[in-house]
Length: 143
Image 1 (cartoon, rainbow, N blue to C red):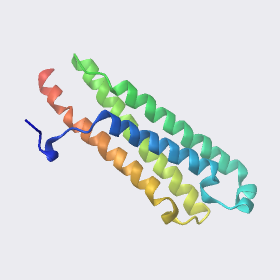
Image 2 (image 1 turned 90 degrees about the vertical axis):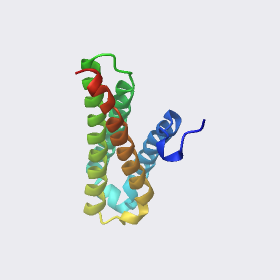
Image 3 (image 1 turned 30 degrees about the vertical axis):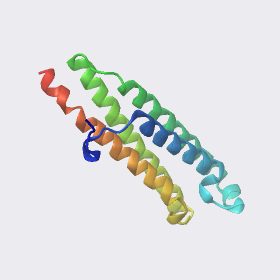
Image 4 (image 1 turned 90 degrees about the horizontal axis):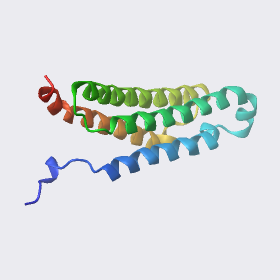
């Protein structure tokens, strides 16, 4: 019997593809100096390089927390650790968005230039939140 579309779980492959798309978008943004022109980049090289390192580090940490959360909980401690990792991944996504905003506002870079990248991050945040919400079924099991 097939499952109605509204009740299907997100596939792991789709979730992973979304994360790797975000990582690729971040790498492209860093390589393009957040869309700043060459003159702006040379004038503010230290700041832009620092933000670039920070964004790439955040992406790596998100992957680490998502992988740590991808363990089926068998006890309350594992459930709480899993939930904590998911929350940290969400917080790191917000940190990436803040870094993007800081750079774009400081150098007056058009927000519409990276709207797809930002939408992908929001989609990932919502996916992790939904994943975390679906874990509430374990809460009753471990009480």
